[in-house]
Length: 176
Image (cartoon, rainbow, N blue to C red; front, top):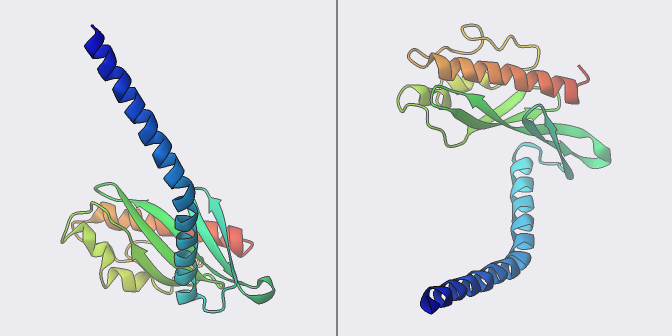
């Protein structure tokens, strides 16, 4: 009976020491990680908005907007972090949108869409048709966005998501 209690107390002591050690290390590294993340975010912004001075984050209905501002608070554009619904789950992506509401670029995160079919949303000509769209664009399959044969859910999910993001962008940053 004494042996199991001794083992349990030893394990509890080891867990307590490990937890305290991790908390101590986290206290010092979390600030460095936050600084590195902020620097990376600013580097991403500078790619599209070279005169960026500050960045402000806003979340609107599940869309994370990182708004870039220049000198005297001039709005330059946003990077919008979004998840579309595809055939195999969420499709994370980032849209770069300028101050007039024109899509400058799109970047896809890791997703589970089917290789050679659903993954075609990440390739030309699908991506090329997205670049340049604005809130005034129809953003509909078959009109300004290609429908991908065999990947209807992926392409239609992207179209719905893009329309939603552009509507939220217009209301939040273009006053309508």
